[in-house]
Length: 242
Ligand SMILES: Cc1cc2nc3c(=O)[nH]c(=O)nc-3n(C[C@H](O)[C@H](O)[C@H](O)COP(=O)(O)O)c2cc1C
Image 1 (cartoon, rainbow, N blue to C red):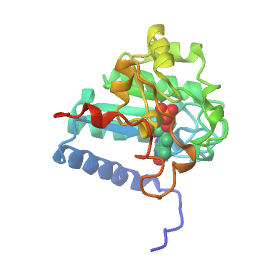
Image 2 (tube, protein in one colour):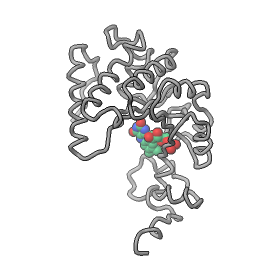
Image 3 (cartoon, rainbow, N blue to C red):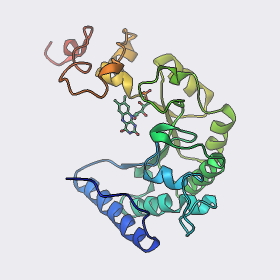
Image 4 (cartoon, rainbow, N blue to C red):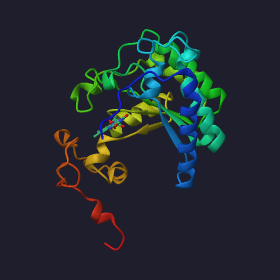
C-alpha cells in the first residue's frame, strides 16, 4: 500500500487527533503498561509543531509563540493525564536536535523552558532529554559525544521543571556518574550500550568490560549479526541454575 501524500492538518481536525492519542493511552493501560512516554523529540510530530522555523501555521497551533507551538503537545499531555494521572507520564525532548533533518530554531530555548514550566505545573512524572547533539542528525555518527546541551540550559531546565529529569545520548558508566554528580539530572538512559550488552546493568555493577555496539549493523536485517553475536556476552553465566 502506498502512503498518502502529507498535508497540513486542519485546525478543526486536531481534537480528533488528540482523541486518537487518548485511545492509545487507554490501550496502553489495557495492555498492562506502567505509564506512557510521549515522544516529542527527534523531528517527529510534536517536535515539528514546536519548531518555530518549521511550524508556519497561522492558527492557535502555529509557530508564533511558545503557547501556540506547544499547544498540540500539551493537549495530548492533558489527555494522557486524564487517563493515567500526571505521575505516570513522561515527555521526551531533543532541544536543538537535528535528527530527521530538523532545521535550526532561534526560539528553541524559549519554547523548551515554557514547556518545562507547563509540565511542572501539571506535576508530570519526568522529562527525558537528548543531552548529546548529533551534528549530522545520524544515529551512527561517532562525533556525537562531542557536542551537548550547555550547562546554562540544563540548569534552567532543572529550575523550570520540578519533576524527574532524565538525559540520554552517548553516555558511558563514568560520564553518566559525572552527570548525576552535577545534580542537574536524576537519571541517565542508555540505548546503544544495551544493543551490545543485554546484561549492561550487571556489567556496570561488577565493573565488567562493556562491548561496543556494531554501528554498521544498526539498521540491517541480518538476523543475529550485531545483536546477539558478541563474543564476550556473559549474561548466560548469570542466569538461574548455572
Ligand atoms: C538502532 C537505533 C535506532 C533508533 N531509533 C530511534 C527512533 O526510531 N526514534 C528515536 O527517537 N530515537 C531512536 N534511537 C535513539 C535512541 O532512542 C537514543 O536516544 C540514542 O541512541 C542515544 O542514546 P545512546 O547514546 O545511549 O544510544 C535509535 C537508536 C539506535 C541505536
